[in-house]
Image (cartoon, rainbow, N blue to C red; front, side, top):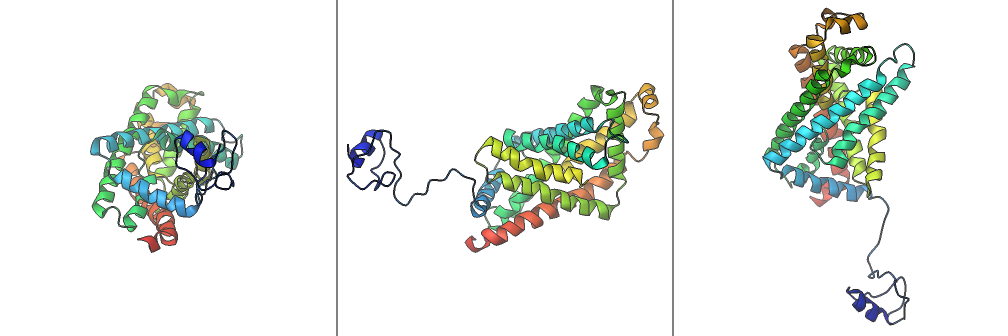
Length: 318
């Protein structure tokens, strides 16, 4: 059988060569047909291809309808909140027993669940969507489209994260471990509202630099396993180092506020504390954190990651 006959039988075009065979040369049944000039790769995408993929994804995200965009954003907020709840739980009871750095590493690994669910499950996350800046810089989408996406997704993330906080508190999960889970949740929330605006802003920049790098790395992967492996190290790193993520804080701070408001006296007795010890957990504390952290996240995602990779790989193709 000649190569052309084999190609015709397979229902494909006649290639110039089959795995190096000369035209007209007989080949064994089942040989792979590789047209000359076509490179077949099974490894990860390279950075130039990742940049093009990031811009194309940005166009698709910006073009979503309001309803699917909002619903997917609610899911993302809930996913990040679940990762935050997981991180809180694995940290419970470790204070004074396990070294601080190790506890933070374990919490970071647990928190990675959130972005894994977002990326693999398919959802719209405000911080990751800061990479829409690459499509915008290429003039593939308008400023209005970017702001529309960010606004809808941010609100949806807030609904999903706060809704998850309500469910966690309603379930009484904060009382598990003799109240140690709730104690960690309160301490985490109190730490976050205690940052000044400048510190919160810079911590937000550093955080979303790593989050967007995690998203960027997933663009190189061809498999679900590859995406997961790309996500975990940057996300574990930002949590371990104590950087600030606006969507995560939409869970961490409200869950602390809710525990302070509804936890029974038996819970406070179990952790040897009182609601008055967490007076800063209020609406002013929430807004005082979210505003600078959100602005920092935008700078970290759009400039430190999106703008840099656009400048290197896409500017000349605009």
